[in-house]
Image (cartoon, rainbow, N blue to C red; front, top):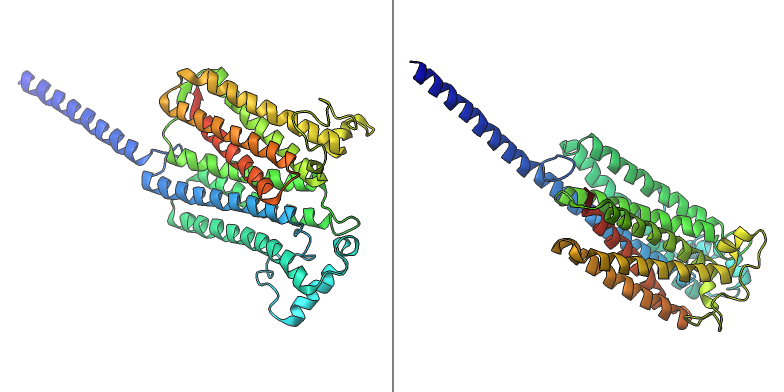
Length: 372
């Protein structure tokens, strides 16, 4: 009788243990993501966020073309809710054109432009703004659907809400940037342009990180040094992008179109001419271009060092390092070519697109790492 009781007890304990294993196994299938939500929900939300990343990437490229073709100041008003449609009649086109003819860009650069010529620069800016609205819809509607269906837990709701707020803020920043070119001078402020670009990079970075959390397994364990090295690369890419935005805002790529020297000198002879000294890094054309060159080279060397130091990483991480090295090499080549050829539109736009890709790959690399 004791033997039967003990055997039964052991069987019960084994059954309980077996059930626990089954439950844990089921949870592992349902909680692949870091947010501990069902796997098929995580996959759908992650793919949706990757689509948002692709749309923001296209937005940055379109914004680059808009700036390079000097189309960004063609629309002198901002109607975030009612501005979906372009002018549809002769009268509407004429009213839009008349408003533009009172702007500094028309008065100082494009005086005498015809309505047909105006339409050519109008459409790029219009498409840029329309695409921004489409991103907002592409984010808001699925977000509302996921909320209603109960697919999101609190941590995920909080992060996605921040993304939604940043997206709305980006629209405001975009108009704030355009307004700076509608007052006295026919150029937007380089500070506002840099803020607008960095906000786009921040949005795509956050969306990508959350998507990777939802779609990827747990990060690989590496040394603290390797993890911090990857953090440094992401940080230096952001700083280099900011510097590049200053170059674009000041049209600083139109001078010193030689490489590696700047008209025969390592340091531009006309640089550091503004007082106080710190303004040179934001407002002096020669200094801004010089610092962008330095930051680009530092970024490339850091990526090369990471690739070399990561020779012993797992094959998956090694692949990511290889991709990052390849993109940074292409990006440096495009940057030098853009400078030597005095900023051709297509190449300059490709260079800006390369910056987005480099940041995304750097985040992909960093996401796969967890310190021991």
